[in-house]
Amino acid sequence: MPIGRRLAAAAAAAVFFAGLGVSSGVASAEVTSSVRSYVTFTEPAPFTAPQVKLKLGAKGAAVKQLQTRLKELGYEPGKIDGRYGGATMTAVWAFQKVQGIKPSSTVASKTWQALEEPVAPKPLVPRGKPDRAEVDLTRQLLFLYKGGEVILISHVSSGSGVPYTEKTVWQGQERIFRGDSKTPPGNFKTTWRRSGWHKSYLGELYNPIFFNGGIAFHGALSVPLYPASHGCVRLPMHVAEELPKLLGTGVPVHVRRTARA
Image (tube, rainbow, N blue to C red; front, side):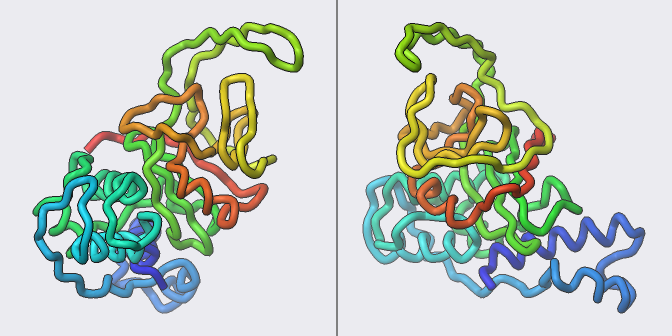
């Protein structure tokens, strides 16, 4: 089982037991049995960081160690090839945000230390369905659960909140579209999807998976460190390539705002 899943499961267990008024250390056999299929308490495998400062464009063994560790913890760095490119950078951003580190493309002592002793991500919906997606609007993160375990954590960029007016030709007619560019919090479910590039009246969406009307998860060429979309949840392209294989139709999607650390 990937280490990231074990960490998330342990965090979910702590919340679950707290809700029952008991600590995980003194839980009854019955309680332990009832949640066994959702939690695993295995500690992450030992990891010794190379403590080499890495910047975007770096190459070599230290980069490969970084990519391998991120992958083990549930963060998708793209191809594990020893090359520090954009895909690995967005995985670093996601990891840093979960660990409470200011996101940066530079991997230095704080990030290496966190990779040695990572903090488990806390579920936004502790008693949610075993298969679900959670979007943290505050930290701009996506958490994908399968069987109660986190299998993917990704950096995202959601709605900017800046009202828009777009004039474009749509279905053979010139039309004007207006909106608020918001990704509203709430509970939704995945609905329809398209493979490859899908043209919408607001632009091109890669592998979109819709979950709230016209709001979708989709790949984009620009996924900055701030909310920038018209309302959709933008994903790095390499994550959008994999997501349709992992996220089915009718799966709960929980969109939340969280308290800042």
